[in-house]
Length: 531
Ligand code: GAP
Image 1: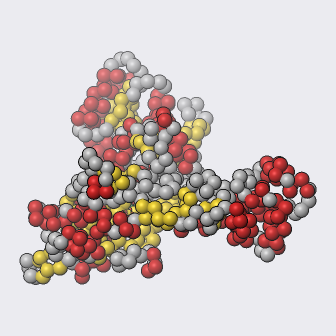
Image 2: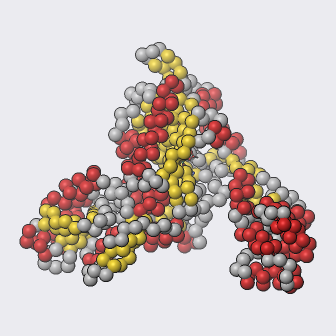
Image 3: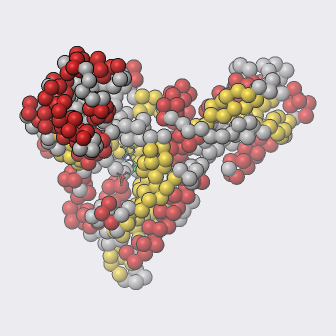
């Protein structure tokens, strides 16, 4: 078996996810809606397992963490206190021509990679030969011959004679992206009022940067006036801070303790992209861990390492995972320390989860805005203080995407005749896999379907997600389960009827063993616990 893992593309993962029912585009039959996604039969199981794993490891198996489940819409004052109403916005520029939006802080990078700047450079490098290029038709012909795209709004098309000498000069002066951008911008600036920079997508003029609030606005009640404005929560954390006193008063927690929540958050992202990575509706798994200020550094380190190891233990290769501490100037003004757990996706290294020492910022803000006392009274030391907070904040959908990318594998395995055949498999960790096992009768007769059904039912009754399949050749049934990420396949065959044994096949190693038919539940439990 050839087990070498090839580099994968996001398209290959997305195509498998659609084909096998992990992820679909939201409202696809109407052309979809940008930034929203649906999870299919396998995806919803995987997502549930992922959240269960987090809840189990962060809440249920600890004595110092409790959970909450808060409303999506909260009193708008919450967002004033948290700073989201004032500060949760990105300055953005909009293209006059193609109407695309760009974050001001991403613009330079996007321009440097833009296709039309490349086209300008290539045009300039080609020299002055062929006067026909100076006409609009000539330019378009030149571009199509070169396999290049010219920005439709680019001044070069409208005034090639005026632009050409400037391009030549830019090339002579070193030919970097900035030089070409400047050439185009001085020509475009003349006839696009208000254009302050150029669109990375089409070369059109961009507006001045404008504030764009990322919170989705709605109205509560019958009237759509300013008094009834409310927002869909952009993070689950604030529900936790607002309930910190309630939890203290209604449960027996004592500092240090954590409050955890998994739930939906909404952000009207300017550029949703990279499949589900940046969506407008997504789920977060957040923990706010309250501790004495003198212990905050210790707990920060504890949660940073615990959260990193959680991803490794569930199958993300540590070589693709990084723990990156924020530099001083990257830290939010209230944060004392912050680290990002990053994963190398097919589109680049990006954040999965952030772990921050948020100090007493949030509780102090809520104390000020609500007028409620957020101090904690330690009855042993008689000390009153506002606890400091360590916050591991992860995205369910991002974690899922990382696990899906990590699991996607193409390898070659021998078929019945020993010829190598390529197969696609999802090497999902057994804890996360939608089904833990599939059970097949070798043929649909001689009591095999009944025996296989019994094993399936026994597993389900024991709480193990099992899938029964009797359709098609056995090899094809294996392939279907490989793509679904099912780690074990049980086959009931002729021997089962005589010796009460079945074969168990391991998805990754393809090793098959015979085990007693009445030990399947035990064997699967054992394998999952050791995985
Ligand atoms: N309470 C802190 C907070 O919300 P954040 O870095 O804005 O911090 C935390 O978000 C996590 O939520 C991110 O690490 C990411 O996993 C997830 N997340 C944030 N925005 C997202 C989006 N647009 N789409 C998917 N996941 C997102």
